[in-house]
Image 1: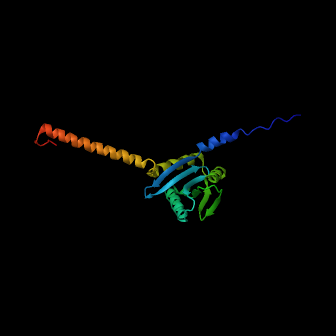
Image 2 (image 1 turned 90 degrees about the horizontal axis):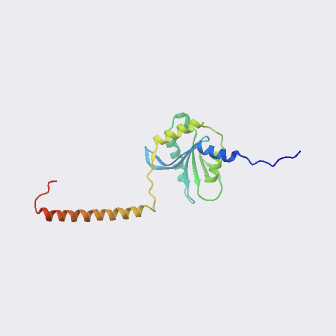
Image 3 (image 1 turned 90 degrees about the vertical axis):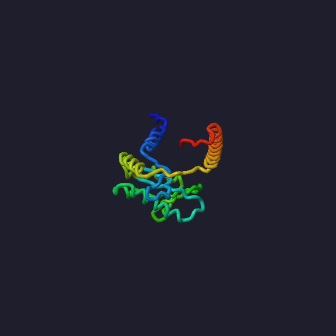
Amino acid sequence: MSMGAVREPRHSAHNDELARRRRRELTNVRHPSRPDLRVEQILVGPSGIHVVSSLPEGADRFLVSRSKVAAELVASALPERYRGRVRPVLCRVDDVEIADLVGDVLVTTVSTLEHIVRSSPAVLSTSEVNEVALRLGACLEPFPVLHRSEEPRWNRRRGIFAGLVAAASSTGIYVLMQEVGSTALPW
């Protein structure tokens, strides 16, 4: 009796697509009561609500308390039954794979967070994921983020446009005054 070739698991690509459809993501939002505090990313999935902030290399511990405040603000926008499922997360940007708890805040890297989100037990159903994401989308507002590469270009264009408008308007008024003479304009 011959054993056939071992089959490749067919479900891995299907499961990844299914997991992506069951997750919702909000980026660069703020709570109306704290418009100065930017929440970089909120991942809502079966494993819970993860409020993610980035932790640059060499940053101070002040970001841990700021991450907790951001998670508390997100939790305050939700009904009581979902507040216990909100987790503050600080993502390091270096290559050292880490997952550690500092107080109530999970300090990890992006790849480790992805693994944690995928492999954690489900605490929200698909309908709850949708409900939480819709509620957060309605309660939180976009945080205005200026990209440094676009800012000088826009300022330059705005300055040129303002100069052209000023030159055109002063020239137009001068030509109009020459044709009309010294009579008062009706407006």
